[in-house]
Image (cartoon, rainbow, N blue to C red; front, side):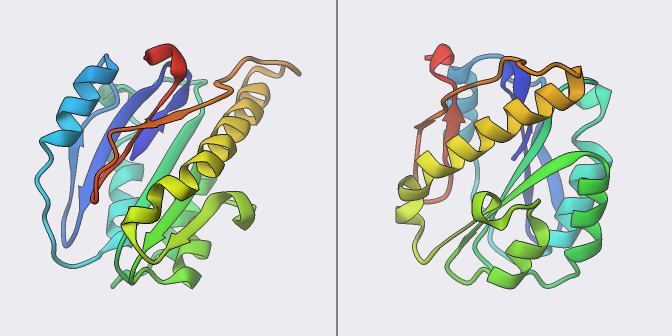
Length: 188
């Protein structure tokens, strides 16, 4: 999921053998609209071309026409349940070089080494792994805290200020076996 965090804009890129934008950062303006869209997502199995998906995100998701704005922290939370069948190192590095923060969540057959290669440092706050998707809620508090802390740091870097405001807490809503949604309490 691609995210321009300051106003909680959320975009979604799905992938298997191909990648596609399910919705842009500026498509849904309310929490309810995002939840409705997530509930209606089709599940498409297939190959796991994570590197291709990362390249697609770089080339398509964080563009002005997709709803991205300058001077807003850019976050990607990658969720995969398989071992990538293509190179992830170069695409992940290109995203990081573009100033995009990467978090990686692996489920079941995900390759832990590749998750670490994808994620921005430090590994302790940016890489998560679980054997079963039903354990997703177990990592959400730590992930939410890590994302909020990093957004706060990125906001300070972008603005040059020492105390820029950022979300201090995120809540998990709409968790299913295949997807979850993270929102700020102010959105509730």
